[in-house]
Amino acid sequence: MNSKVRIVLVNTSHPGNIGGAARAMKNMGLDRLYLVSPKVFPSDEAVSRASGAIDLLKNAVVVNSLEEAIADCQLVIGTSARERHIPWPLVDPRQAADLVYKENLETAFVFGREDRGLTNEELQRCHYHVHIPSVETFSSLNLAAAVQVLSYELRMKSLLSVNEQPVQTKWDVPAASAEQVDYMLEHLEKVMLLTEFLDPNTPRQVMTRFRRLFQRAQLDQHEIGMLRGVLTSVEKMK
Image (cartoon, rainbow, N blue to C red; front, side, top):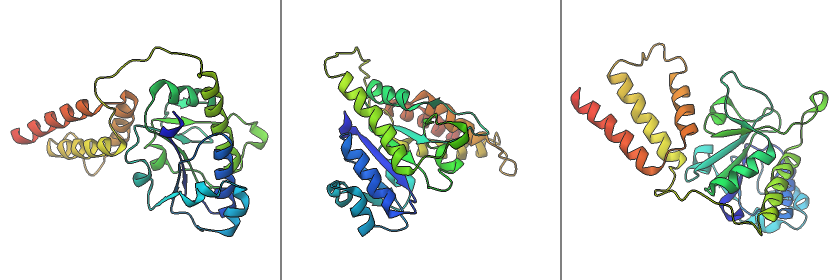
């Protein structure tokens, strides 16, 4: 199961935090590290903080954008320290681990910048937000510590499920990837502009709410194809 989980660090400022995150991951049996435009990498400081998890640093996938890091993922869970203007499905670390083992999908856990976390746009690309319930008077966690908490819950879930045979729904079609959902939403926006449902001058948060709707539904690849077929038929009528 852990082979389907990746840890994604976005715009990490301090290379030591990358090393610390790698160490936390290896402690708990995770080995897929993705780095989105790190400020400094590779780095001797990252190697020093990794303390034996050098293989994770050597095999880390470095990309330029979050979209690249999650393009083939079917479940994306982003860390968030606060509630957002538009409510999003919110889980704690243990519930997040339950989701991973329940869904059995290609999964990314996304961690933001040390000073300000993930942007609203980045969080909107996530199916769920995970919040670590630290005390309100001192709620800020070090990046590597946050990775440790999530990795620990995944490890505990793995150990608890060794002797279990949970009943799982066997879906007939693979889940849609983040990239496929993005293309479908772009197609939807194009058609809504064509039919004048969407006003380009005052779009408000229409597309954000549509993204939330479709990500909450967790569409499969066939459903994505059906929706795009409907959109294409509307285009032909216009």
